Image (cartoon, rainbow, N blue to C red; front, side):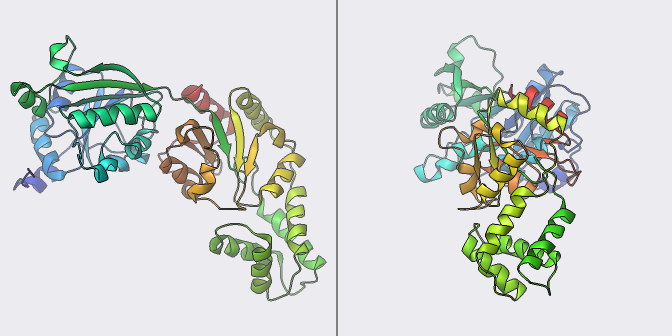
Length: 417
């Protein structure tokens, strides 16, 4: 039965003073989160019982959230905040901030075609993946047998271990704070199902972007070399910047990198007729020029990482070209394989999935400098991700990020070792 909108809903919401914002809490205590807080009884009682734990309540429907706000507001609790949004949108705001998630009496979505809407479906588990500070911890309570069976299978398939389970919670001597629904079901004699699921925050592969991640991009050096190759092919009425723009436009219009189509596109863009050897020479120049000695911090990072994880490379350019470039820099020996834009290009999910043939997506960590084509696509697949923002291009980004190799090593050690 659908809940009617309270007449004072918007007034209550507009006057709420405890919405969760980027400022977070005024302390560094652990944060627990209830997704689907309903009228707020469980959340309020937990916050009162455990004042040294911070709590966030998430509710998708504003009509329901307004009732929770009314219940919670008189207590003026410093350790309780709420959010009105779908759990799929929690990403950046709560990236690596949550210690555990409660799923209490979630909508069972009984029809098979609605399975993806269940809060323990793979789609939602992917969304929770990077909310956790480190290891994942989920508690679920439900009266619905089918949802409970679905959750047990879904969690196990996603790598969780069920560490505690009950098919009649109230017959066991477990510490328990009841929700509104739970009290009603208990009074009716309906058995409550309960589970506790954990998953270690382990990774098996670390995937690096190249430019401005492993190698700092030097536009001036590119333009200088582009001038040289244009002179070699006697395209004297164009400059390096024109070739630079041509390649950029080709990247925008092409789903993958192909020598023939690239040569044709550049010829048309520069209003000339170039042979296919032009692309081969271009690739050779990119592979052999701008070969800087790797920094000591980068070598230290790679030496540390290779002893614990498989390292791979993902680039939007030709894989062979960048393999040669990394080899010339003395770096490719650190990496197991390189995936390039020969078949598909970032942010296409296909190129990220090239690394998941022998591991799960959540066992992969993507490190790149671009939020839109490196980080968000990886997160959408359930991968972990760290934005490498050495140039400080994303000062307001709240996703996990690093500004240096030394800082990157520290983050990976703390979260994944």
